[in-house]
Each structure stands twice: as C-alpha cells, then as structure tokens.
Amino acid sequence: MDQKTTETEEKDPCCGSELEPEAAADEHSQADAPASECEEAGDAGDGSPDDGDQARAPEDEPEEAQDEGEAALAAAKAEAAANYDRFLRASAELDNLRKRTVRLRSDSREEALRDVLLQVAPLLDNMRRALAQETDDAAALRQGVELIQNQFQDVLKGYGLEEIEAVGKPFDPNYHDAMMEVPTDEHPPGTVVQEMEKGYALRDKVVRPSRVVVSKAPEEGE
Image (tube, rainbow, N blue to C red; front, side, top):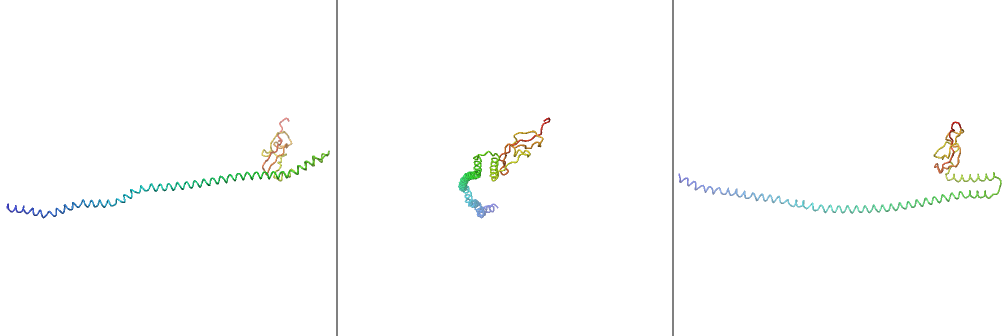
C-alpha cells in the first residue's frame, strides 16, 4: 500500500507537469490582457489628433474675429467718410440755395419797385402840371385833382390793392380800427359812421385797416 501510494504521489508531479502547459497558457493570456488594454489605450490615443484640432481651433478663432473686426471697422470708416462727403455737398447746396433765394428776392423787389415807379411817374407829372397852372377856378382845380386820384387808384388796383369799404358797414376788427364811439339813433350800435383814414387790402390780405368812428346806443336822458 505504501509503495503504491508513493508511486501515485510520484506520478502526481508528472500529472502536474502535464497541467503546466494549461497554467502557462492562462498566465500567458493574463499577460496578454494588459497588452490588449495598452493596445486599446493606444487605439484610443489614435483619436488624439482630433482633440488637438479642437484644441487648436480656439487659437484660430481670435485671428478670424480680429480680421472680421478690422473689415467691419474699415467698412464703417468708409461709410462715415461717404456720409461726411454727402453732408458737405448738401450744406454747400443749401448755402447756394439760400444765396440764390436772397438774390431772387432782391431782384424781384427791385423789379416791382421799378414797375411801380414807372406807373407813378405819369401821376407825378400830372400833379406838377396842375400846380403849375395859375387859376382862380377852384372847380377846375378840383376836377384835375380828382382825375389824378382816379389814375392813382387805377395804378394801385393794377397791383391788386383794393380799398376797404367801411362807412355804413358793421364794425369788423379784422378790417377796421375804431378810433372813437359816438352815440347816435341814426345807426344801429356797432356801425361805422365815419372813416378817418382809408384802409387797403392786397389780395384779401389787410395792408392797413380803416380807422373809423363807430356808433353806439345813446344813454338814457341824452
């Protein structure tokens, strides 16, 4: 028995030696595992260039933003220069228009005055002739003065100047300037009874209001 057992035990090492290749394989597989992990890590490391590109991208963005900012600034300066040039041109045109308008007004005023003087000159000649006559005929002198007055009124009407009707009309502050009031029963209160100075209107615009005397109701006992 003891000899058999000893033989069996002696064979066990042989059996163990037969199992050694399997254990070695296991050890080899375990040794390969870290290599595989390293390879996987290496594979994962292969994506590092992409991460590098992403890391380098922010460095390029400031340069692009700077270029865009410089381009926008240049465009704004060009637009400002164009606007300033247009402003100068508009200011010059406005100044020329103002000077042209002043000159036209002055020319128009001088032309109108010249025309008026040409119309009034004959009236002055008639007035001078009337004064040069030596006569005691008051009626003839009056007739001559009335003729000159009518001629002068015709000249004024030619320029659109009209006399304002006042006597017998209701008082209108737009056309009449009341100098005084007189109590009377002959006219309703507020009626123009006398014209002290003639009023004139130029194309429905009052040049000078008529200065008039206005009636009022008499007080009791008058």
